Amino acid sequence: MELIMAMAAGLTVATAAMLLARNTSRFFQYEARFSSAHISAMLGMQRLTADIQRAAFLSTPNIREDPMTCRSSSTWPPGLQQLAGIRIIPNGSYNEHTADLAQSAANGLQPDSLIIGGAFGTNEQFDVQTITGNGTNVQLQLVSGAMKRTEMRASTGSASLPSIFAPGRILRIVTDGQPPYVYGVIAGYDAATRSVLLGSTPALPFKDVGPCGISSSGTNSGFIVSPVARVLYDIRSLRSHPTYGLLVEPPQNSEQMTGDLLRTELIRVELDANDEEIPSTLEVVSEYAVDLKFGISTAAIVTATGVNPEVQRFPIQTPALANIGTVAGDITSGGTPQRIRSVQVRLSTRTRAPDRDSERSYTAGAETRHLRFLIPGVVPSVAALGDTVPAGAPAVYARMRTLQAEVALPNNERAQQW
Image 1: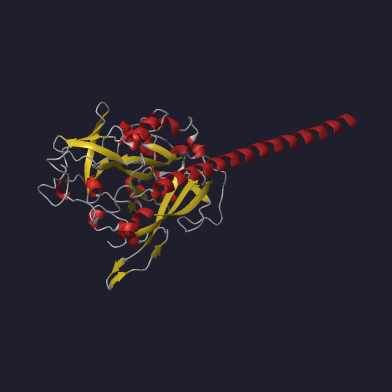
Image 2 (image 1 turned 30 degrees about the vertical axis):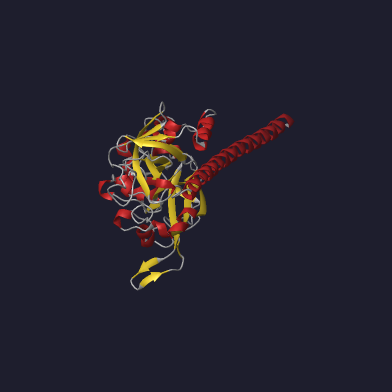
């Protein structure tokens, strides 16, 4: 009898220890996943806000309205015609990648997308030695401070001149050390002669035959140039991407348990002068990103009764306010992003695997802190991806991490009179 009682007591203690160890391990896994979601959101927000702060830096808030720009927009490619500090596309990620964002849509989320224009590759402005080839060859001064500093940094692993003056980017030329500025499209960089090569379209304007531009007879020495890029942020799936596809592909037969079936990421990619993505520049900014929303604060809004000079705040909302799409929209369609004084950002990520089986207060699409993300048991678009989810599978929820920030646009200050 004593032996039986001892065995029973030992079995009880062993069972309790096993359950405690299992629950501890599960809790550790849950918290590790949530920590990963938090780090992903934090890193993504830091990169995004840093780029937003550089909107219109060494560039223009709105190239179509900028009084300091030498315009010949009839020959400009689409990307140059749309050069602006900020362009917000309400529901842009969702509209462009609807099938990828089926899980976000099931939660009532339709992420925006954002295009930022400015100088991101360098803070330097380079002195010009001469401009030849009918305006297609911009030779840089070899002994300028900007050149020496850049080459020294490149020797330690920083961006080199060929990567700074990458094909597809835009070159801003400050003529005679003052406005109006001239813009061309970079076609390449000749390291042997330290020359930036420009495309023939658009041709640089000449001040000999027009009100502004470069000189067709002089060397144009003393001009200053800087590279300008347009970067796109949006949320999409990378399962079929040639570089990141293997990174985001779920382990075999695990997608039904983890929700990896339709995982999405926040990406950053440069757009060329034709408004097309440059594939080699695509990078993952935030893993398991599920929502991206923006709001704005603006000055001098034009209304039916005139111009309202007061700063107005249009907060983040789902669906987005029409004013955001109007003010921060495409400048070729009347957008006035030069009037934006700050941008509000909301970025949400989710944990890799669900850790909640129910959510009593869950309301899809509600403007809350977004703490839970529904992973539907049945996803209508999975057949197109070659995967299957058992019909009738119970709904489960992953935890979300949502960060918000408001970023001032210091480079829009000079546009207050436009």
